[in-house]
Length: 289
Image (tube, rainbow, N blue to C red; front, side, top):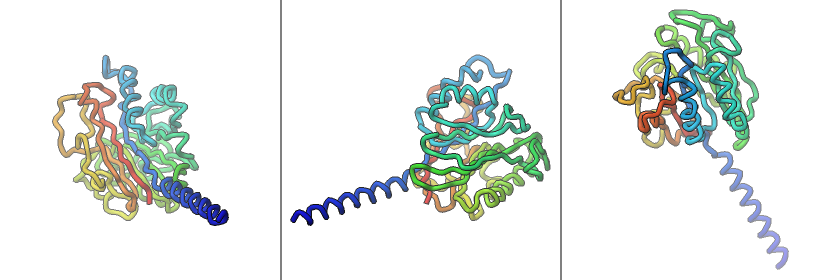
Protein backbone atom coordinates (compact mmCIF):
# COMPACT_ATOMS: atom_id res chain seq x y z
CA UNK A 1 0.00 0.00 0.00
CA UNK A 2 2.83 2.34 0.90
CA UNK A 3 4.58 1.62 -2.41
CA UNK A 4 1.40 2.45 -4.34
CA UNK A 5 1.07 5.74 -2.42
CA UNK A 6 4.69 6.61 -3.20
CA UNK A 7 4.16 5.76 -6.87
CA UNK A 8 1.13 8.07 -6.99
CA UNK A 9 3.18 10.90 -5.49
CA UNK A 10 5.87 10.41 -8.14
CA UNK A 11 3.30 10.36 -10.96
CA UNK A 12 1.57 13.52 -9.68
CA UNK A 13 4.91 15.31 -9.30
CA UNK A 14 5.95 14.32 -12.82
CA UNK A 15 2.63 15.51 -14.20
CA UNK A 16 3.04 18.86 -12.45
CA UNK A 17 6.56 19.28 -13.87
CA UNK A 18 5.37 18.46 -17.38
CA UNK A 19 2.42 20.80 -17.05
CA UNK A 20 4.61 23.66 -15.87
CA UNK A 21 7.08 22.97 -18.66
CA UNK A 22 4.35 23.08 -21.31
CA UNK A 23 2.97 26.32 -19.91
CA UNK A 24 6.42 27.90 -19.88
CA UNK A 25 7.10 26.96 -23.49
CA UNK A 26 3.88 28.62 -24.57
CA UNK A 27 4.48 31.93 -22.75
CA UNK A 28 3.72 34.75 -25.21
CA UNK A 29 6.07 37.68 -25.89
CA UNK A 30 4.84 41.27 -25.81
CA UNK A 31 6.52 42.95 -28.79
CA UNK A 32 6.39 46.72 -29.23
CA UNK A 33 7.25 49.29 -31.85
CA UNK A 34 7.69 52.91 -30.77
CA UNK A 35 8.88 55.88 -32.80
CA UNK A 36 9.71 58.27 -29.93
CA UNK A 37 10.39 61.44 -31.98
CA UNK A 38 13.95 62.67 -31.72
CA UNK A 39 14.85 65.84 -29.81
CA UNK A 40 14.13 68.79 -32.08
CA UNK A 41 14.38 72.54 -31.48
CA UNK A 42 10.91 73.11 -32.93
CA UNK A 43 9.37 70.92 -30.22
CA UNK A 44 8.63 73.15 -27.26
CA UNK A 45 6.34 73.08 -24.23
CA UNK A 46 4.45 69.74 -24.04
CA UNK A 47 6.14 68.51 -27.22
CA UNK A 48 9.67 68.84 -25.83
CA UNK A 49 11.28 65.47 -25.12
CA UNK A 50 11.82 65.93 -21.38
CA UNK A 51 8.19 66.97 -20.96
CA UNK A 52 7.10 63.92 -22.98
CA UNK A 53 9.43 61.53 -21.16
CA UNK A 54 7.12 60.84 -18.18
CA UNK A 55 4.36 59.93 -20.64
CA UNK A 56 6.71 57.62 -22.59
CA UNK A 57 7.65 55.99 -19.29
CA UNK A 58 3.98 55.57 -18.42
CA UNK A 59 3.20 53.93 -21.77
CA UNK A 60 6.05 51.44 -21.40
CA UNK A 61 5.19 50.72 -17.77
CA UNK A 62 1.43 50.44 -18.30
CA UNK A 63 1.72 48.03 -21.24
CA UNK A 64 4.61 45.97 -19.87
CA UNK A 65 6.43 45.41 -23.16
CA UNK A 66 8.92 42.54 -23.14
CA UNK A 67 10.89 43.89 -26.09
CA UNK A 68 10.56 47.17 -28.02
CA UNK A 69 11.90 48.34 -31.36
CA UNK A 70 12.37 52.10 -31.21
CA UNK A 71 13.04 54.78 -33.83
CA UNK A 72 14.44 58.31 -33.71
CA UNK A 73 16.17 57.70 -30.39
CA UNK A 74 19.28 59.82 -29.81
CA UNK A 75 22.01 59.01 -27.33
CA UNK A 76 20.61 61.66 -24.96
CA UNK A 77 17.16 60.07 -25.14
CA UNK A 78 18.65 56.61 -24.73
CA UNK A 79 20.52 57.74 -21.61
CA UNK A 80 17.33 59.23 -20.15
CA UNK A 81 15.43 56.00 -20.81
CA UNK A 82 18.22 53.91 -19.32
CA UNK A 83 18.25 56.07 -16.18
CA UNK A 84 14.59 55.18 -15.63
CA UNK A 85 14.53 51.60 -16.89
CA UNK A 86 18.13 50.42 -16.49
CA UNK A 87 17.23 47.81 -13.89
CA UNK A 88 14.49 46.38 -16.12
CA UNK A 89 15.56 46.89 -19.74
CA UNK A 90 18.83 46.79 -21.62
CA UNK A 91 19.14 48.90 -24.79
CA UNK A 92 21.54 48.60 -27.74
CA UNK A 93 22.10 49.89 -31.27
CA UNK A 94 24.32 52.29 -33.23
CA UNK A 95 23.55 55.73 -34.64
CA UNK A 96 22.57 55.83 -38.30
CA UNK A 97 25.50 58.07 -39.21
CA UNK A 98 27.69 55.50 -37.40
CA UNK A 99 28.05 57.72 -34.39
CA UNK A 100 27.93 55.62 -31.23
CA UNK A 101 25.91 58.46 -29.73
CA UNK A 102 23.82 59.32 -32.79
CA UNK A 103 20.13 58.96 -33.56
CA UNK A 104 19.15 55.43 -34.47
CA UNK A 105 16.89 52.42 -34.02
CA UNK A 106 17.88 50.86 -30.69
CA UNK A 107 16.15 47.79 -29.29
CA UNK A 108 15.03 47.64 -25.65
CA UNK A 109 14.56 44.25 -24.01
CA UNK A 110 13.83 42.92 -20.54
CA UNK A 111 16.98 41.73 -18.83
CA UNK A 112 15.26 39.03 -16.80
CA UNK A 113 13.40 37.59 -19.79
CA UNK A 114 16.02 37.48 -22.58
CA UNK A 115 19.68 36.83 -23.19
CA UNK A 116 21.17 38.77 -26.11
CA UNK A 117 23.36 36.19 -27.86
CA UNK A 118 24.55 38.29 -30.81
CA UNK A 119 23.80 41.75 -32.13
CA UNK A 120 24.79 44.25 -34.78
CA UNK A 121 23.69 46.86 -37.29
CA UNK A 122 23.51 47.08 -41.07
CA UNK A 123 22.76 50.03 -43.31
CA UNK A 124 19.90 50.19 -45.79
CA UNK A 125 22.10 50.50 -48.85
CA UNK A 126 23.73 48.33 -51.49
CA UNK A 127 26.77 48.17 -49.16
CA UNK A 128 24.95 47.31 -45.92
CA UNK A 129 28.11 46.50 -43.98
CA UNK A 130 29.59 49.95 -44.66
CA UNK A 131 28.57 52.22 -41.76
CA UNK A 132 26.83 55.40 -42.83
CA UNK A 133 26.40 54.28 -46.45
CA UNK A 134 23.57 55.65 -48.62
CA UNK A 135 22.21 54.21 -51.90
CA UNK A 136 19.36 54.37 -54.43
CA UNK A 137 17.01 57.33 -53.88
CA UNK A 138 17.45 57.36 -50.09
CA UNK A 139 17.51 60.91 -48.72
CA UNK A 140 19.82 60.16 -45.79
CA UNK A 141 21.58 57.40 -43.87
CA UNK A 142 19.23 54.66 -42.72
CA UNK A 143 20.08 51.57 -40.70
CA UNK A 144 18.69 48.47 -39.03
CA UNK A 145 19.59 47.11 -35.61
CA UNK A 146 19.41 43.36 -35.07
CA UNK A 147 19.76 40.86 -32.27
CA UNK A 148 19.65 37.12 -31.72
CA UNK A 149 17.79 36.43 -28.49
CA UNK A 150 17.23 33.52 -26.14
CA UNK A 151 13.91 33.65 -24.32
CA UNK A 152 14.80 32.35 -20.86
CA UNK A 153 11.15 31.57 -20.08
CA UNK A 154 10.62 29.28 -23.05
CA UNK A 155 14.13 28.26 -24.09
CA UNK A 156 13.36 29.42 -27.64
CA UNK A 157 15.67 31.55 -29.77
CA UNK A 158 14.62 34.16 -32.32
CA UNK A 159 16.12 36.77 -34.64
CA UNK A 160 14.84 40.34 -34.49
CA UNK A 161 15.47 43.34 -36.78
CA UNK A 162 14.29 46.87 -36.02
CA UNK A 163 14.55 49.66 -38.58
CA UNK A 164 13.37 53.00 -39.99
CA UNK A 165 12.85 53.25 -43.76
CA UNK A 166 13.44 56.45 -45.71
CA UNK A 167 10.55 58.91 -45.87
CA UNK A 168 11.23 60.06 -49.45
CA UNK A 169 12.67 57.25 -51.56
CA UNK A 170 10.24 54.53 -52.74
CA UNK A 171 13.03 52.64 -54.50
CA UNK A 172 15.14 52.62 -51.33
CA UNK A 173 12.19 51.37 -49.28
CA UNK A 174 11.58 48.45 -51.66
CA UNK A 175 15.30 47.62 -51.67
CA UNK A 176 15.35 47.88 -47.88
CA UNK A 177 12.45 45.42 -47.61
CA UNK A 178 14.37 42.92 -49.74
CA UNK A 179 17.48 43.54 -47.63
CA UNK A 180 15.64 42.74 -44.39
CA UNK A 181 14.67 39.34 -45.77
CA UNK A 182 18.18 38.74 -47.10
CA UNK A 183 19.84 39.66 -43.80
CA UNK A 184 17.38 37.58 -41.77
CA UNK A 185 18.38 34.55 -43.84
CA UNK A 186 22.08 35.38 -43.68
CA UNK A 187 22.33 36.29 -39.99
CA UNK A 188 19.35 34.49 -38.49
CA UNK A 189 20.53 30.97 -39.16
CA UNK A 190 17.01 29.67 -39.72
CA UNK A 191 15.64 31.12 -36.47
CA UNK A 192 12.11 32.57 -36.34
CA UNK A 193 12.39 36.17 -37.57
CA UNK A 194 10.70 39.37 -36.39
CA UNK A 195 10.85 42.78 -38.07
CA UNK A 196 9.60 46.05 -36.63
CA UNK A 197 9.86 49.65 -37.70
CA UNK A 198 8.56 52.92 -38.95
CA UNK A 199 8.53 51.97 -42.62
CA UNK A 200 7.20 55.31 -43.88
CA UNK A 201 4.85 53.60 -46.31
CA UNK A 202 1.24 52.44 -46.43
CA UNK A 203 -0.13 48.92 -46.74
CA UNK A 204 -0.78 49.19 -50.49
CA UNK A 205 2.91 49.79 -51.31
CA UNK A 206 5.33 47.45 -53.05
CA UNK A 207 7.50 47.43 -49.91
CA UNK A 208 4.76 45.96 -47.75
CA UNK A 209 3.89 43.45 -50.47
CA UNK A 210 7.52 42.23 -50.37
CA UNK A 211 7.39 41.83 -46.59
CA UNK A 212 4.00 40.12 -46.69
CA UNK A 213 4.59 37.69 -49.57
CA UNK A 214 7.57 35.58 -48.49
CA UNK A 215 8.40 32.45 -46.54
CA UNK A 216 9.77 34.16 -43.40
CA UNK A 217 7.35 36.71 -41.95
CA UNK A 218 3.76 37.98 -42.01
CA UNK A 219 2.04 41.20 -40.99
CA UNK A 220 0.90 41.00 -37.35
CA UNK A 221 -2.05 43.34 -38.01
CA UNK A 222 -3.67 41.07 -40.60
CA UNK A 223 -2.67 37.91 -38.72
CA UNK A 224 -4.12 38.70 -35.29
CA UNK A 225 -6.50 36.07 -33.88
CA UNK A 226 -8.56 38.88 -32.36
CA UNK A 227 -9.60 42.12 -34.09
CA UNK A 228 -6.92 44.84 -33.90
CA UNK A 229 -7.69 47.55 -31.35
CA UNK A 230 -7.02 51.28 -31.31
CA UNK A 231 -6.43 53.52 -34.29
CA UNK A 232 -5.41 52.13 -37.65
CA UNK A 233 -2.98 54.99 -38.29
CA UNK A 234 -0.32 55.06 -35.56
CA UNK A 235 1.16 58.36 -36.78
CA UNK A 236 -0.89 61.33 -35.57
CA UNK A 237 1.63 64.18 -35.89
CA UNK A 238 0.99 65.77 -32.48
CA UNK A 239 -2.61 66.43 -33.60
CA UNK A 240 -5.05 65.04 -31.05
CA UNK A 241 -7.93 65.61 -33.48
CA UNK A 242 -6.28 64.01 -36.52
CA UNK A 243 -8.82 61.78 -38.30
CA UNK A 244 -7.98 58.11 -38.43
CA UNK A 245 -7.61 56.30 -41.73
CA UNK A 246 -6.05 53.30 -43.43
CA UNK A 247 -2.61 54.86 -43.27
CA UNK A 248 -0.44 52.48 -41.25
CA UNK A 249 3.26 53.33 -41.51
CA UNK A 250 4.47 51.52 -38.36
CA UNK A 251 4.62 47.73 -38.51
CA UNK A 252 5.54 44.55 -36.67
CA UNK A 253 6.14 41.46 -38.80
CA UNK A 254 6.26 38.07 -37.09
CA UNK A 255 7.32 34.53 -38.11
CA UNK A 256 5.00 32.76 -40.56
CA UNK A 257 4.09 30.04 -38.07
CA UNK A 258 3.81 32.31 -35.01
CA UNK A 259 0.46 32.86 -33.32
CA UNK A 260 -0.54 36.52 -33.00
CA UNK A 261 -2.95 36.64 -30.07
CA UNK A 262 -3.62 40.38 -30.28
CA UNK A 263 -2.60 43.61 -32.00
CA UNK A 264 -3.05 47.06 -30.47
CA UNK A 265 -2.28 50.57 -31.57
CA UNK A 266 -1.97 52.23 -28.16
CA UNK A 267 -3.69 55.54 -28.81
CA UNK A 268 -3.65 56.77 -25.22
CA UNK A 269 -1.95 59.98 -26.39
CA UNK A 270 -5.14 60.99 -28.18
CA UNK A 271 -7.52 59.53 -25.61
CA UNK A 272 -5.92 61.41 -22.70
CA UNK A 273 -4.56 64.32 -24.80
CA UNK A 274 -1.01 63.73 -23.57
CA UNK A 275 2.00 63.79 -25.89
CA UNK A 276 4.40 60.88 -25.64
CA UNK A 277 5.46 61.15 -29.29
CA UNK A 278 3.99 62.03 -32.67
CA UNK A 279 3.45 58.27 -33.18
CA UNK A 280 1.39 55.86 -31.07
CA UNK A 281 3.24 52.73 -29.96
CA UNK A 282 2.20 49.30 -31.23
CA UNK A 283 1.87 46.17 -29.11
CA UNK A 284 1.49 42.63 -30.40
CA UNK A 285 1.26 39.55 -28.20
CA UNK A 286 2.90 36.60 -29.96
CA UNK A 287 3.69 32.96 -29.29
CA UNK A 288 6.56 31.38 -31.22
CA UNK A 289 5.82 27.85 -32.39
